[in-house]
Length: 127
Image (cartoon, rainbow, N blue to C red; front, side, top):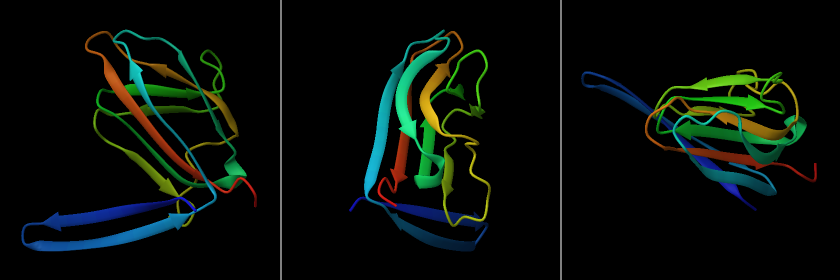
């Protein structure tokens, strides 16, 4: 059974604290995508069922816009800052950043260097 371990750390001066969250489900759907500079609506087929989603991790080494299901009229638009991951899990106490089931992602990257977009999902495909 696949699992994700999410490590959280905080520090300020000499004060430090950390926590770890472990999630398991029966399937992972992951991708690492090379995105050419100046890409608009690069389609990535990656199914995510909201009711089944247990863990979501997205990061890109350059600022990137991620849209779901349609590049011109998306269900969700997520702006990722360079190197700053979006991390969500089913017991984090926050709303899921995805508002509807996903069939495809559409990636838009400004002109400049190529980038690498990484997405990791953990899903209960047999709830």
